[in-house]
Image 1 (cartoon, rainbow, N blue to C red):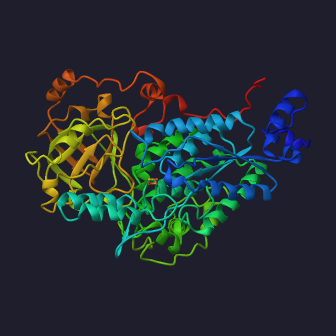
Image 2 (cartoon, helix red, strand yellow):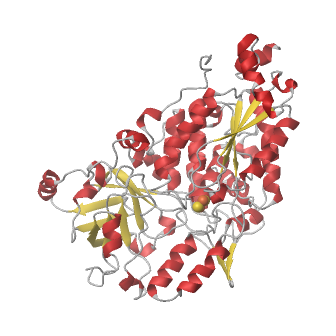
Image 3 (cartoon, rainbow, N blue to C red):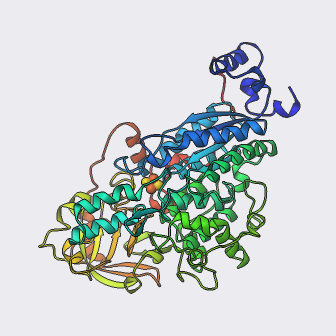
Length: 576
Ligand code: FES
C-alpha cells in the first residue's frame, strides 16, 4: 500500500489485513467486484435520491450510471447508495419537515462507510439542500449533480411552467374562466419529460445555488434533464470527484463566506426562490460560516433581476439553457464587480475563470445588468413588531402598488380555517384587506409548508382582483408569485406576535422601508398575550417529536439545533 493510499479514509476498511479486511472486502465481492478495485484507489459514494415517489428524480438511475463511468475512467471505485428521497408533490405534511432528517441520513451514511468523496444526485426541491447539508457536516470532497429541469411545458399555444401555471389555472377555474376538463387536460402538457420543475422554482434555484457556491460543475443548473448533455455532465462529475479526492478539495474549502455572498447575489439576479433563504442559512450553519437573515437584504438589495423566467417573467429553464444559462448570468455579475470572482469552485478553477468567456445568446431571456429585467431582484427582509426576528418578501414577484400598503387583517387561525372560509360569500374582505394565515411555521403545521401564497377569495377573483397582501409564518413555492410576506419569525405556534393578530387589526407593509407593523397598542397586545395558549403538540414520538423539540425558527434556517456545525469524516470504530 502506498503512503498516499494509507492516509485515505477507505483504506481503513478495504486496506486492512486479517479478519476485518476479509469482512470488508469479501461481502463486497458478492456483487462481482474484482479484487483490484480494493487496491487503495479513491472510493466514491454516489448518493442517490432516486425514487418513483419523487418523480423529479425518477431518472437518477441513468444519471448514477453515467457518474460511475466517469469515476471508473479516472481510476476511482464508485459505490452507489440510497438515502431517503423527498418528493415535493406527494409527501405530507411537507417535505420541509424531512429536509433535516435526510441530511442526517446523508451525514451518517457517508461517515459510517468507506468513502473518500461523494457525488450528490439531487433534483426535487429539498433534495439539494438536504444532501448539501448532510455532506457538509462530514466535510469530504463532494460534488452536486442536479437532475435538470423538465422540457418546457406547452398547453395548446401557450408555454406553461411547473407550478406557476397551476396557481394561474386554479384561480381561473375558481373565477369561472376555465373548465375542469381543460384544467385536467393541462396536467400532461405541463410535465412532459423527465426532470424537475422547469420554472425558476426552488429546484432550479437550488441547482443554481449549488453551481454558484462552487459545489457543482459549470452549467449544472440549466441543462434540461432530457438533454444528452446532462449525462455528459454526470460523466464529467464522476471524473472530477476522483481528482478532488486526490487534491483533498473538501467542501469547507469551497463553502466560504465569499461563496455564500455570491449565492445571495446570484439568487437576486435570477429571481430565485425565497426558499433559498432558509436552505443557505442552514447550510452556512453546518460549515460554520457566519451568515444572517439580514445579509440577504444587505447583499441582495442592489442586485437587479436579469433573468426573464417564470414565476417573475415569461421564459422557462430550457430557454435559459439555450440563452447561455447560469454562466452567462455569473459573467454579467462578475464583470460588474458584484461577485467574488476569486471564489474557488469544484473544478479547481475560480468562478471568474469559469465564466470569463461565457456567451449569452438571447438578451430577452438573460438581460444585461445595464438594462435589467427588473430593478429589484433580491429578497427584502422586513422587521417590526409583527416580525421581531424578521420576515421576507420577494419584490420581483410582488405587485409594485402593494409594496406600501395599510389594510385591515382578515385572520385565519390555521390552514383548515382558511380552507373552510376563504370562499365564503359572507367573508368580510375586499382587495385592500391583508390576509393573515397562522400556524404554518416550522412547528405549527408542522414542517413549514408552502402555504404562504394562499389563494385569494373567489368573490374577489371573480371581480378581477389578482393580488393582495398576504402574511404568514409559512414558506411559498418557488414557482409562486404575489405580494406575499413569508417566514414571519417567531412563528405563531412559538408565541410570535403573529399569534396575537385579530380580524380588523390594521397592518402596515412598507417594503422600501423594510417594515412590517401591527398597529395595535402595546397594552392590548399584552392582554392578548396573557390569554394566548400554545397549540397542542402534534406528536409525542418518533422523528416528529425530535423535530418539534429541536427545530429552530426560519430566520436561522429551520435546522435542528443539534445539527448545527460539523462532526467531520472521522472513521468510526470497527463493528466486529
Ligand atoms: Fe419536484 Fe418542483 S415538484 S422540483
